[in-house]
Length: 508
Image (cartoon, rainbow, N blue to C red; front, side):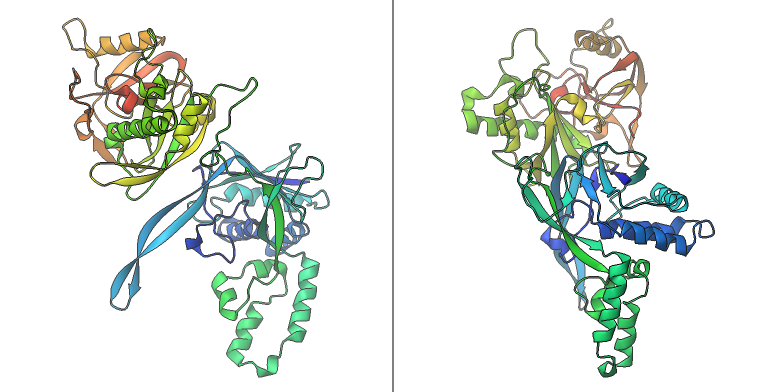
């Protein structure tokens, strides 16, 4: 048995299925067997030791992996896309063309597993070559689809995406969704198909240039057919690459979760309570982390608006609005915490509700499809996932960690006094949250994509009028606790709207 695990550290898999235009906004899921083998061949050319692993060894590996198509275990995923305008030269001027970038969103800690049948076996040298190629594999699909791949010595799990023409599970009656994936033909079948194709072609009527181009796309070995450039294949007129055929896979209908409007179902039994959800934003440009409090406020407003449409204004729960909350539960309502990507742009909004998110609140969050500001800026929004806090370990705001650093400025919530400094207020807030007393270190600046940022670079005010705001300047801090605490951690004025947010110091 051969089993290969793929993890996507960026949480995205970009790949357009064969025969589809990029602007159809369709994403290939799972990765086609043809794509997997081409990725192995490409990494052999770029990084392999050709003396240790000669071309004949690579050909043998590809031939064996092509003997039978793999089955897959698909993790939970979400289908998404972004859209942007790209300049295209027409004559002497550029014309803006709208481009759709479709991708599959996966938890960075989850893994996709490809499992070949027991009939496919590798010898020791082929296994070593496969391990070396998987170790050096950096991306699969588009270049932004970062991947970590490795061979599993054992796989006892169940596959949920299999090559089959049956759209219903014969044992459980579960309905499947068919998807067509391109795969290599076995080497024996390719050799027979090539000979038959060559014998059927009218070579005498072809021009020499055309004859040469066609011959170049009919190599003797299967591994060389997988090496062919897509442009060369299309130039000759092949509808699909030589040595390839399409296989119908059956994948679960719910392989892309969470589902859209009306799909939130009530949880039964003893499942973990829902306390956290996350929205993903799409648009160009995405908002800056310096405007976190503005985005946090409009996310809260959008949530309350959708909840009011479902249940009426009187039915909006205090866990979403923070109004009329029970005594002694000051911070039990929702924290709307914008999260920045590596470019300092807000790509997610983490919504953490210590008091719990009920079914109606989830329905309200699921109905949010866009956010916009008064200045006309607008972004598409999608409920990416929801569940217990432990499901969001890929977030920079979710622990555990001993050391936490400011992501947005901390604004002390009480007026400073001679014996009530900012440090005293930080310790008091931690104490009131049930956290141990931290060691505090003032940070003058933070770095966002190589840019030095001070608190003055952030917007630090709520839009609600009449609020008492003891601190208008803000400050950055590093908090070190005697033991790991579990985030998210947001303190100070406006902490429910993105201010005073702290991130884990060590985040992969």
